[in-house]
Image (cartoon, rainbow, N blue to C red; front, side, top):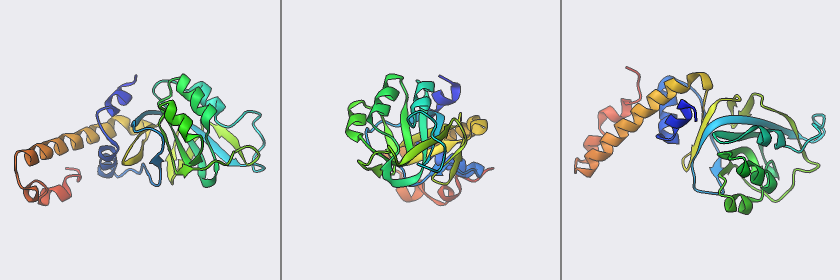
Length: 218
C-alpha cells in the first residue's frame, strides 16, 4: 500500500474536499451516490471511457475488462459513462471479477446494473443510479487508462479517490501529499471542535467567527 493510500484511510471525503478548497483545487464529483455497500472507497484510479455504440471502433473486448484485469488491491475503477442514466455502464460479472482481484470499488459517471450482485460481493459501487438496460449494442469502450472526465472533474490514471456517504472526491496524483497534509489538519481541527462540544462548550463558541475562515491559507 502506498503512503498516500495509507494516509487516505484516516480522512473522509469532507476533509479532502475542505483541503481542496484550501488549495484552490477542483476534485469533487457531484451527483454520484453509493449504491451497493456502506463501505467507503479509497485508492488509486484506473480509468475507463465509454461512448455510444457507433461513435468509436469496437475494441474487440467487453467494456471494463481490461481495466479489471490490470487492477487489484488499492485500485479503484473509474468509468466515464458520460453521465448517462438510460443504459448501464457496469454490471454483475464485472463486479465479480473486480472483487476477485481485490479491487477497492467502482465509480461510474452514469448508471450501472446488477446492484444486488455487487451488494452480495460487498463491492462498493458509486454511480448516478441503477438501470436494468444492458450496454450490449448500445455502449462500447473507447479506451482505458487514459484521462477522463467524471462529473466535470478531469481525472487521470494514477490519481487518488475517496468516496463515502458524503460523495466522491478526486486528488491529483502530483498533489497527493499536499492535499493529505491539508486534509489531516482539517481532521485534527474538527476533532478538537467535537471534543469541545462533548465537554459542554456552547456550539456558538465552538463554531464562532474563526470557523468561517478556518480553511484560509495562512
